[in-house]
Length: 170
Image (cartoon, one colour):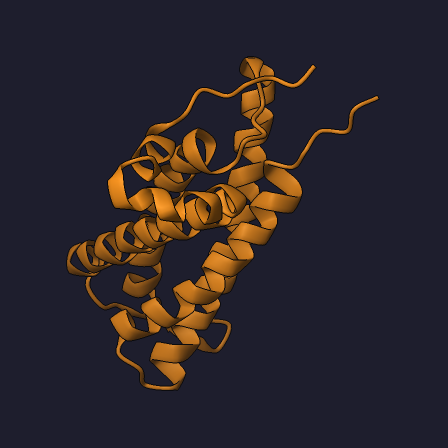
C-alpha cells in the first residue's frame, strides 16, 4: 500500500501563484533541487564557519614526517566540517531524501553512515585545501569554495547510494 505524504513547506511554496507553472518540474526533480538548495546552504555554513575558524585558530605552520602544513587551516576546516555536517544531516533527513530510518537504532545507523561518508569527503577536502593553499598559493577562501563543489557532488552520491537509499522490499 502506497503511503500518501503530507506536503512540506517547499511543496506549499510551489503551489503559490506564478510558481505553479514550475510545479511539474519541481515534482519531477524535487530531491535533486532540494539537495542543490540545501547543499548551497551547507556550503554557506561551511565557508562562514571556516572563516570564523581561521580567525579563531590562526595560521600555524607545522611539520610531520617531512611534510609541512598549516595546522590552523586544518583546525578551521574540521570546525567548519562539524558545523556543516550537522546542518546537512538535519536538512537532508527532514527535506531532501524521502527514505529515512525509523526508530532509535535505525536513526543511529543512518546518522553514523552519514557522518562516515562525510568523514571521507572531509579527508579529501582537507588534502585538496592544503594542496591548493600551501602548494599552489591560492587564497584559502577561494580554494574552499572551489573544493566545496567537488565535496557537494561526492556527498550527494554517498548520501543517495549509501545513507538514504531505498530499502529493498521482500
